[in-house]
Image (tube, rainbow, N blue to C red):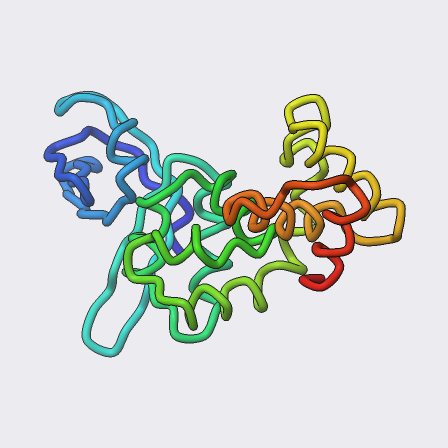
Length: 196
């Protein structure tokens, strides 16, 4: 397994980079965020890598940091998601935002990413949510001070009833998007409970 590559940037493309390593040039596919952080041609770079071995090809994927690589590995473990689709997903959002979308079960936000339909979004949530809930703590969700009073009071009530903060946040966000976050806290909580 190739853990990482370090060398001189020989060529850059929106989704790939060619790196000269002591006279041997390797081409690695990269996400748009990684491509944006690449140094200029002729400068040194180091990327974490993943080598995908197929019957007819060896495909090298490069990542700016360990978080992006870890998320890539999680994605390709989901059924029907290959490396190319995973790179497209990573190109559409930051790892933190993508994790938040999964943890909160935001199907609509996930389907806005390239190559993800509703079925795929639901599959990603089902297969990755439990893994990510452990790695995404409450700090990744907005604090009560950042939310409207109605939203904050309803979220506090739901967590007091024993519901996970991320699940409550997901449902209330959906209600807010649909303009159903009106009325007193009790009414909002009753509506939210129907969604949980």
